Length: 254
Image (tube, rainbow, N blue to C red; front, top):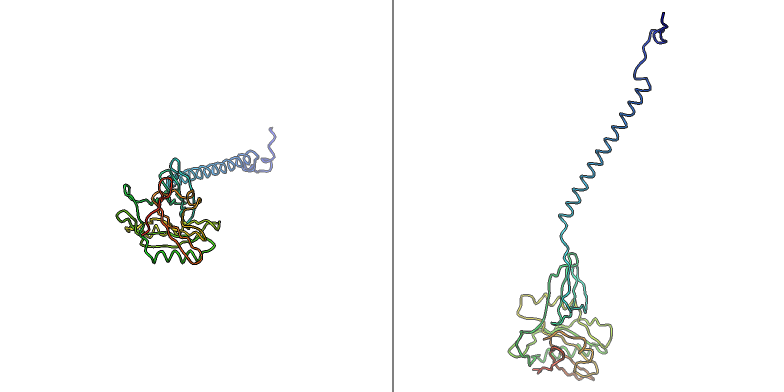
């Protein structure tokens, strides 16, 4: 007779789930399932990342770049909230360029020049305006005062309709530089009106009312009027000049 197995001898059957091969197969199935879940998650994340990147690229505006014209150079810089104000000198004259700081785009450009073909001979500056400049010049001693002149073209001359004192931002005591922020604010105020900034003025304490060497080399805005006030011991003298291509030409002060 054949010998019965131990389980048959005791009248019991072996459970298949308790065998080693079953446990190994079950562990392999669990590990495979976990790997499949991880792979699916990575696939979903990758697709979402690509879609987000494409959306960002499609919604991001193209950034424009402000470039200077050939031969131009920046001679002054100022800033306002969201704006960069550049004073640019080019072969055709000086200009003010206003650039948006976020996009880099040129949002405005201002050039002050008289109509072409006119021969400017006179500057009409009333006595009250001259006295305003003289009072400011005396108060600024020993430094120079400065400001902007607003007016209109009139026949063969320019008539001043407003004198606007500004802060002198020059570091040297014998120099002047009109505050760019005040210049920009006045330009905005005059938009849509027949008036324009026709020139500037400054003082020469204890000097003469003629352009200095620094005045001649530091200006190139063709068609811009310069009024110089010389003050000394209570006396004052006013003279007017027009900036031309390479020099100042004195105007009749009427």
